[in-house]
Image (cartoon, rainbow, N blue to C red):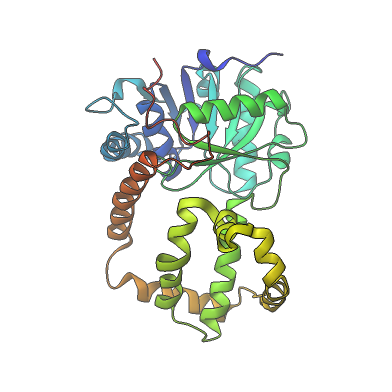
Length: 334
């Protein structure tokens, strides 16, 4: 069955209205979509409305929203997941990261959502093939669309298909996220943890080793990222950073000169386990870094600086990438 084309997607259902759902709702409204949300938690509807209001100024600063205030008349809430599915042109699932909960949610969506409409899951850890196994009617239309927090600000979305995936569904998901102003990437095959989580948790594992073994303090570990690796990686990614480090010969020259050293460093990476002692070291290090400020204060500062960064990035597009986030320049869909 052909999928509902992009231009006919008008109402997006949000199955789950926690922190991730809040970000999706605000962004979807900003980009001109009607939003129908459902969440069983008491007070979820009121929290969602408040969250959209709170996130709106950031979307205006990013150029993703043009209205002075969020169009809350296009935000609806229902306690019935089946009613949500029946009334939606696409569903973004944001249930808790628990396979059994997702089984119930996805099965009900699949049973009620017309078969020509996508189910996109925000899951950061459950493999798409497992999620597709929860669908009895049309597993081929379920994909991962994994965002990054805060979802209304950070452009990246990982699109991952499973063993039953329809290539047309993957392409439609990529187009949909692009229209939202996101920067979708497609994983060619499913992998535990997807891509970005594997990269960041590989780094966390080495940071845990260096911290718990007394190599460096939490402050110095984060300083290495903030003042050395992070700025370059944010501008051009890890591979291109190493490519420039090789000089005129690029990465090939770098590996020719330092390949043995690289292999030695890889071999020296410790297979760190998340023991109680390592957990304690990580938590103590993080507590030290907060410097007495609340996580809410830190999150507000982070979001403000991220907005400035992404505005800067939009003004300085990556020279060879024709698929930068387009939402900063496009008008919302009408």
